[in-house]
Length: 502
Image 1: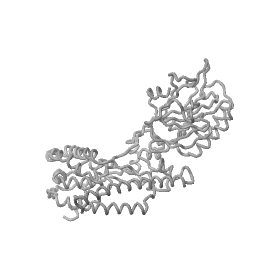
Image 2: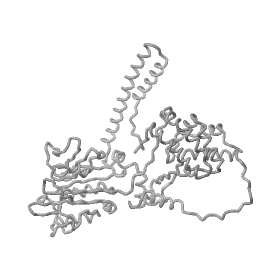
Image 3: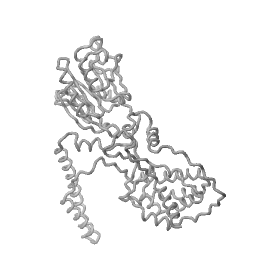
Image 4: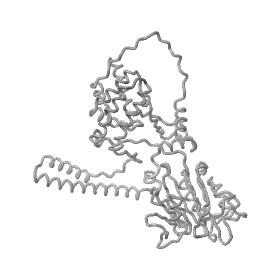
């Protein structure tokens, strides 16, 4: 049953009630699927292999809860079951405890509550339905079922609506699609399909690991394109043509970078301290062995090579053991389940899309529209000054840039500066200049010749840093910085050097 539904609808997970349990596990599912059960075995959640690894939040008597990441924010999924003959107040207390613990976070509750109310399809209303409606009103949550929704239960010509789905906010309910499927389930309950369609994507820009080598491979891939890039530079006759040439140059540099260098990952939290004195001693031993290997010859060299390989493998194992032990210690010593381990796994990093949602308090609109609204608030338009009419002036021809000028500036540029939207950092620019100096020389001199600063080099990334202790909803309490392309910053330094010293 689950396999057929998974093939047809390709879900990320199943929220189940009263599953067939064997040896404490949900039966009838592949071994590669992960499943979790409540203490009574009446409520469960099944995650498919394509789904990101969730964190088990809690397993109560009739409630199972896991936490996942949605747009890099914590999102809790709760499965509940209440027997028609059980005390309904107990399941509501479990829900209350859970929603209180995750206050402020988004969540979805799916359960078989066996409660009657006209609000979700029944003709009558019982005490369970009244209590559940009071719970919904108290917690300000939103019911996805409607009064005219199809029945979720059918048995011997009897219909019912016991299966309910609730979400934590109106914005989440607005992007949810809830539908009762008519296909065969081989039991009295029908499948309920829930789709969460977020129309704001997570924005991210690549940043390459260029500090650890790989430059020879980059040069070999890029050298075949150098002459093909120099020709359009020399043939550009106006600003529009040169703008298009600049875009082509950035793209042709980016392509081999993507093939050669790895992508940097954003750290979620500060590193946990795991490095110790023993690891430092082993690292020093490796360095000493490496020096001996370089100086040795013949059989001694083979011997040191074998010893170095074994020592390196032992150090790698010791590092992994120390990292895992440090993380285990951090998790076991925490005083609260929502402390540092929880934040490190789910809550620390916020991509730009999350910032949009916090400040706009809505998920409507594209990232571009949200970004423009923020920029308009940060940089309101100022009335342009009256243009000053200058008498006829003759612009003198500027002397071309020399290779030495570019070299002097590149020597003083730090390697660790963040790149712009094209991911071309200072290290890549230095590698290109050292191997193909004529390419950058032609490019910057063409800027002088056409007396223009290319438009693609004016495009930057605006990164917003929240000021600690201030309101997250107010744009005035964010500090913006502007990340420009590296080639543009180099051209700017060349021009500034001319203005200052000539």
